[in-house]
Length: 218
Image 1 (cartoon, helix red, strand yellow):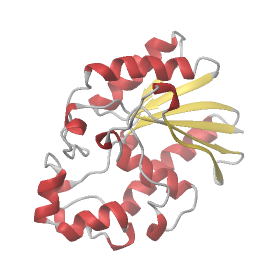
Image 2 (tube, one colour):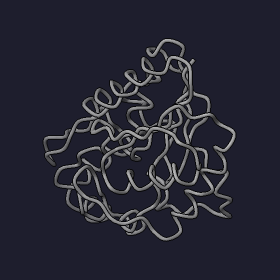
Image 3 (cartoon, one colour):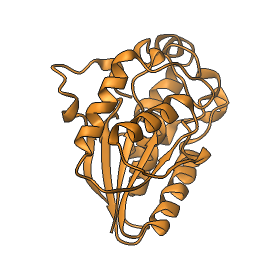
Image 4 (spheres, one colour):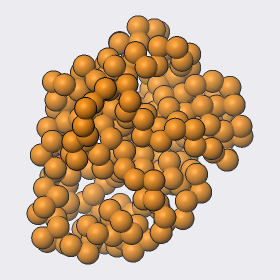
């Protein structure tokens, strides 16, 4: 059995500002994120990790690198372009509120009705494309490690789509489980690399937060 630990990157300045980063935007991790990555590592201390795979985008790559350092083990770390964030086209760099004013229907579909989302309006990637490319990466990892624990460090929108896709959720119900928070862990397991079971969704208990900031989750 392969067990996948999907990690959303640490919180960034643009996350705090409620601004879309996407596949071409990026901003630095907040100072608090480095401490939260250490708390994440502590929660994983008892897990024997075979490999860490990360998105190439700096916010995810930094999260993966710091996580590996905090784990203090000689774990292989591979950067995989297929793990990059959802390419959001014209929405990238824009604040959520501004997107809501300019393309209200696009934003509503992106957040709540993926089956109605028209990527052509904002020159973005489609949900189907994201599910296909991340899903292919995860299936490759399952073949490489038919027995073991694999960490995948990526992004909120891409992980949400891909994980639900791996679980067989249709587009209309892709968002039913809710969002993914910064520095969260979602766990799936598979016996064959084709069929996946959900073990844990969006766990942030190890961060010991008194309250959840709305900007933590997408």
